[in-house]
Image 1 (tube, rainbow, N blue to C red):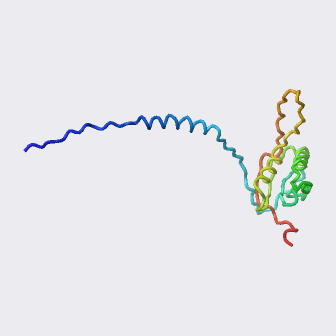
Image 2: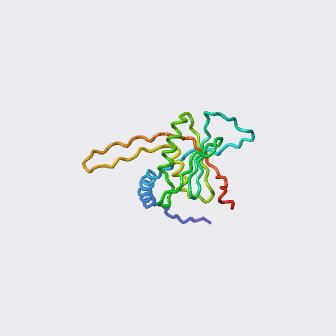
Image 3: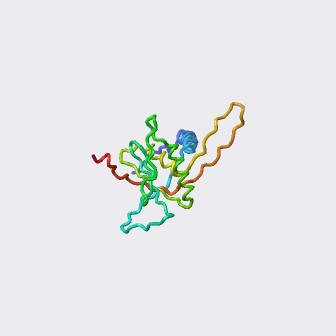
Length: 176
């Protein structure tokens, strides 16, 4: 007996619809990927030192402590430099902090490190704004007239770019 095989026509693969989808999808994905930008700022944690720190007259260990009612700027060795209370509007006075950071940088031009200490309930936006004020001083913006030509913004002054972050010590007022 003879085996008879049915001859079926071979199926052809239709990829036209798939190629059309890819042609539309690839430019869309490429165009949206351009607008995504990732910003990374390198931070370090404060080092734990078991030994007593060497006291130097010209050495500054700058600490900025963010409290709910004020920002405290101090030297780890020398103590509190200035306490900046909240402004009348209920916001922290970032302009006063920037001015104080510029004065401190003028007295200690070689120092590049600072530690920002925040309490656990500190809002992220507040932490970032304080870190920005400690890291660099932005020039004041002059009011523009309608007919004045556009002036290029002056570059920011670098103050303390090496920022460490950590937990703020509990204040005496919060302990009671």
